[in-house]
Length: 228
Image (tube, rainbow, N blue to C red; front, side, top):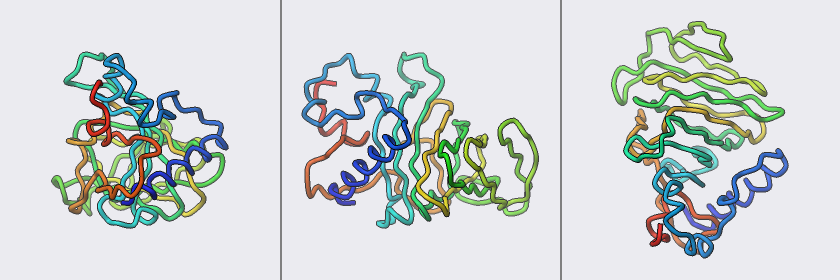
């Protein structure tokens, strides 16, 4: 992806979040130059990958297959921060899909925080790291209502509704409506080692640096930050 496109999507998201009256922490607005003046007291942010995250999953068509995220808080099983939980927001564009994946370690709740618009979530059990189980029923929990659906069922989440996604459950999601603001509350998140996709997919984008970053992505920290 071109950095200029990433910058544009983040600017658009900041406007959207202001409209939604959802406030991000102050570090979300730091420029690369402001980050460069920060010291080791901010290591929890960089070590645990708080911040902006955007991916086209290696498809090269972000608006059809992609996701923009911001990690607000996160623990780390290898670092002494003591948080066994994580929180993110996810921005889903109209007709933009996040492809089938599951987690082995992380259980998560996905919440539709938008005042209008419906999120579609399709579910399968996993046979292995890459294969959908197209025959087994899938247990579902939606806001404390527990039930079972057939393999490949699509759950619709209206405003305020949430779904709990257990480990080992393949899920993909999208919206056919307007841009959505989703919340994610989960166990510790590790996007480098705990995402298992059906297809050969890149979790992080390859970036063409055609202009300077407007905001640093979590994948930029090692490149731009030497003091943290």
